[in-house]
Length: 380
Image 1 (tube, helix red, strand yellow):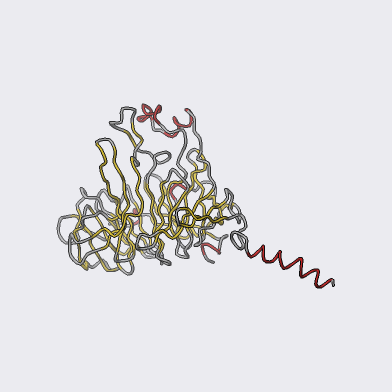
Image 2: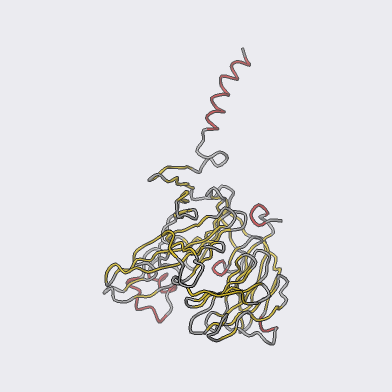
């Protein structure tokens, strides 16, 4: 009789456990809204807040090379750790291996094949086993040795490359003299110049990218309260993440532009008063205090990791960021803080940790950190 009693009691409990909203993540709920599954995460992560334990594994000072001298620079990094340092305003780029050894310049200034003008802006990208460089409406493809493979003229300006067949492009559609719709579209490459075509619109919003003056005729942009559209591509499962930064809601779509699910997290945007606004605005922009929003963005940016996780740079205070980690199912795992003295604002996460540009004296330096205490996310 005792065995029968235990079975009568335990079986319903076991069935109830299996029917929980998310097996293993009891605080995560799911809801169908408009035919799309929404992953509803609580405010706090399931596995807690972690201060990252980091080790500096690479430093590249471009001024250590006599042929390299970049006062303003951005970087591209591939999954194996190779790095390109480039100045988008000077059409100058330089290649380094994953140990920081200099491999030579990437592009030449000019108007010829594989050349770029400082007037166009220049951005470098690792795509598969090639290096792609964009500037204006021009795309040049190089092998890893820097040999030009070919180039195309595009109708749409690439922002994020999606494999070697598509890219995401930010477009502008004017609705009225004072209203502009900003759209991120998925674009498919054509075989020839000017043959790229729109596959699907991924996300759009009106009047973003600027905080407008009261008369609506002008405005300004800054990083903490100016809403903008943010996108990221995750290569392992071929998914696109897209969101409007003023709201903690990220839509996940496939390469047809179809929604797979939506990631939401319970979140209250940080409120700011006059003193906060004065701190956030540079002195030349203080004239806009009266139109500065009373709340900061929900997040600034996001990036997909090679293992399928998503990193979201959440705004946690005035000039403060934390990073939220979501797994491939959209469940909130960790909140991350960087050690004191390292700015989360500059950190670009990758499979082993993160990289950033820091100042060393009067010059910018590329730094790469390995994360040691989260092998589940960043490997061993």
